[in-house]
Length: 428
Ligand code: CMC
Image 1 (cartoon, rainbow, N blue to C red):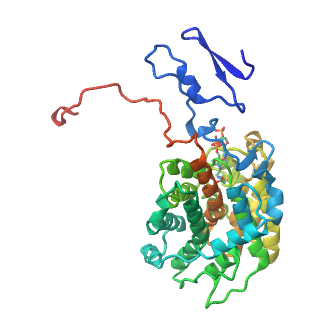
Image 2: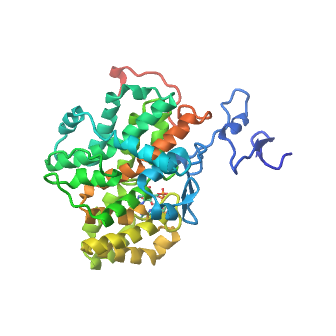
């Protein structure tokens, strides 16, 4: 018997099976041969929320949740966050290697010249009320983009996929800034192609009367935050992009599925939820009572805990450093003081220690965004701008993966067996 196999004995039949092991993993499909009767469907695995199921092979991002390690294409996040630009990281995620100067220049310029959006998109945006949630607007407008680029449907052509990637990378910041201006009733600020990616975005957000005085410390802090969010392997929104993309739909539609997933408070919406929570707590003396209510099962400590990280989220460590730089510029605020104290109390509390609940990337990111002047309900839009390269890189990897087909999980049917239809007059 080969050493790299798993022997399974089915005690219902007494039969034994040897299933190959590759990468410490067995293929679920190999279990289908395990049957009691020849016409049985065969054995499946049951794994709600994919707690222990690999849905793909991926060479993009490596996470070791127990040891708090995150690497993009092999490079530790700490090194990348220190020196890279966001576009350089996006290139790395897509292409697998860091760009040389010529490659980075071409990539940057290709994006630079696609930052404008069709003015009809503004009419579309203006259909939203001023108080529409920014993520709802983003979701609608990105899927709307797909109708402006019907050529994006040809996903079999790598050059065409590159074009759509460029369009999405270039236009998402423009749309994100426009929907902010729409909420405020401010005139739209056109993209400026003489500025770099982050500077152009910040200018479109905050320029008044054509003027904005950039703060280099805050812009670099934003760039680092975008880098820290750029990919996180098979998280909920990336899985959504892959699953929806597996149907063969265009990348704008697949990415909008990722935006929808990110909107949820258990995922990207958590940084917004952190700020709401800090508001609810209100003052430091109310923290112990709040922590007690969480422990009693009333709500969660938002910005704490992670499906994969069972030690300190490495991104949260880096974000804390970024926060120091930002708050040195903007000053401390009451919410930050509550957050620091809340973190201190939770990290020394048995409930959180036992469950390995540490601050995640969202615990401090919202506070930083707020200090930079972004409204609370807008934070997840910044997460979406950061995560876009990850979604697109994972989508591209999926398209090129010969093993992938349309995503279609199985179920364990728990409903009625066959029964006869009941006419209306006989129903109770
Ligand atoms: N506060 C209090 N208790 C918690 C928390 C929390 N934030 N997170 C998990 N727990 C408890 C949970 O009640 C459970 O306890 P018990 O074993 O007694 O039932 C135990 O810890 C395990 O929780 P789980 O729900 O099985 O863990 P999960 O892996 O399904 O959930 C999570 C991961 C991120 C959804 C969850 O920790 C959570 O809801 N955190 C708050 C929301 C948040 O900050 N989300 C951002 C995630 S990072 C950014 C991103 O990737 O989008």
